[in-house]
Length: 348
Ligand SMILES: [Zn+2]
Ligand SMILES: [Zn+2]
Image 1 (spheres, helix red, strand yellow):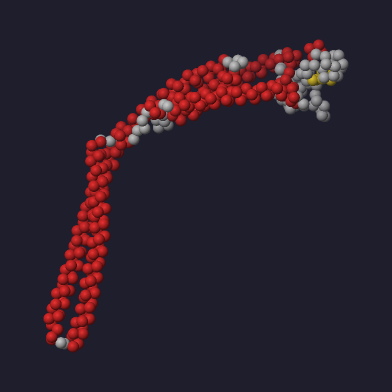
Image 2 (image 1 turned 45 degrees about the horizontal axis):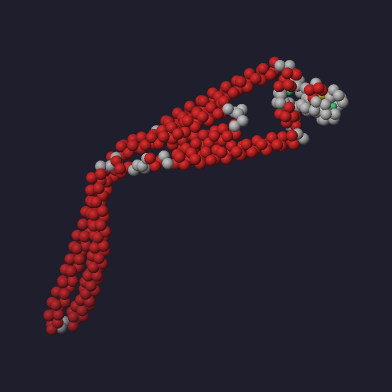
């Protein structure tokens, strides 16, 4: 019913919010660009930077050498194993051929073949010897490989130990660096927060509040996005301490706001009906009445039947009276009579 009354005002408000947000987004863009250049001041740290350089370099060279050797020995072992299988197979087949032949020979017992027995036995011995040689060669390679692997493991342990020894120095350097980055960010953010705080506390009624509101949004964004994540954790102590401090400050202001609200309520309750009615802004009061809420005590309007009541049953605020000029029943918050147009002040 009264909505049309507020349309231009609402549009202005919307436009002001848009201006605030656009202003904030430009400030945020500028701020991020400035703050984005900060990490370049600091180089990222690595654990190895803090290790003893010479021994670490030596251990790594040794590891590289041993890995090459291991690979080489692995290849040679594969070759040797293959060779052993080949000679072993040759011996086995020669042996079984010989067994068959000797069985035939025993059956025929031909003495003319004795020379061939000797020759074949020698051949078998030769094959057996080369099988044994291949076996020994393989075993030697395997021994070398095992030695190499053990040396490699030892060198890797040395490397890990060297890196691990650097941890304390590294961690304290990281903490100092985090702290420096945070201090830089704080130095840039803190003035913004102070100015934003001052705007909120002192300038809320200013004509330029729409721009200041943009600045406040920017300061809050900067605080939560550019500063809070860079808080050095220091095992959680700093974060929890800041959290506790912020909650305490927030709680303090809520308590203060509640106290002053209650004080205002008490003050209002001590006024008489006419004083209370005159203290209310007509637009706000009409808005509340359209949703059936008393503009003064904020409780639901109650009546018998569906007639809109003349008075609030909770606090006695007058809601409807009669126009002095035409006697029509009218809302007390209408500035002019809806029937005859007499100004409300004259209608009293
Ligand atoms: Zn009331
Ligand atoms: Zn009238």
